[in-house]
Image 1: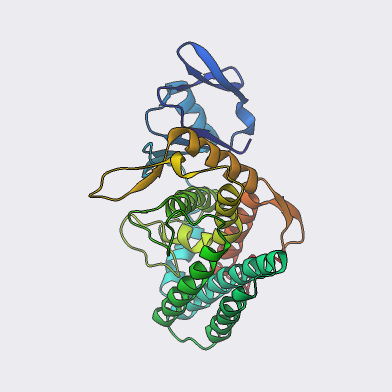
Image 2 (image 1 turned 45 degrees about the horizontal axis):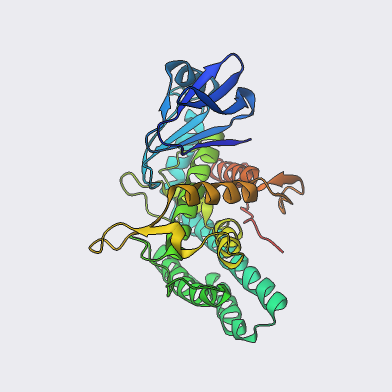
Length: 334
């Protein structure tokens, strides 16, 4: 187990010897070897004891705190840092517009290529010739990437490609559940709710990978470094959104694992649709299964799971900003 997700409201995480134990009402819900936990993600009213906090800090294990709905509150991590020189190189790289544009192009190349490959797979599987237009449009956007001269143009291409992709994504759903296009804040249908929650989990994983490498997750290249925005984490997940989250969402919807009554609408005024408690646990289980799927990393030619792939991409960024590597190779699926 790489990530320990705690979503049982009223539960407590304790440390007993070499194990972490999740309890509720004097009953043990989970017993996990502490050495196997690389990250802890807490949703809502879940308690952790002081010995657990000390252990997480001593071992440098990332701990994320969220609301029961998945809204990010903050994280627990040690203040010790051995990465001062790397952070300085990252700060300096932010002032290099040419380098920032290059990294943005490579990351967006990864995102659009994986979206296109994803649609091609479904076209071959289903024989749906209607996907051809979206596949061709994404290729056109990829061809344009090499000609952009500023980040603004890059965002324009990304926005158009996103609209094309999600229009095609809708046709992949056996039940659209009210999904028309991608709506972020707030998600107003079950599919958007799943996508938003999945991207949130993926961003947490990216932040953990970035901190492990020693970079600052709030200083990105493609996404602007706004206050309290994990820009580099958002950069990093671009290549993985489709192959991780979108894949899980389609599986859950098309296999009838999650249905419309697994969701609830907060209020008519807000229009926000969210997962119910048990459905949230189901999504987390399938998300984690996907993250632990092993693949051959195209740049390093080694077999690793998707979570490790995030870390390896972050390490590439670190090597590029410190001039130890000339090229950044996006993560591409075949």
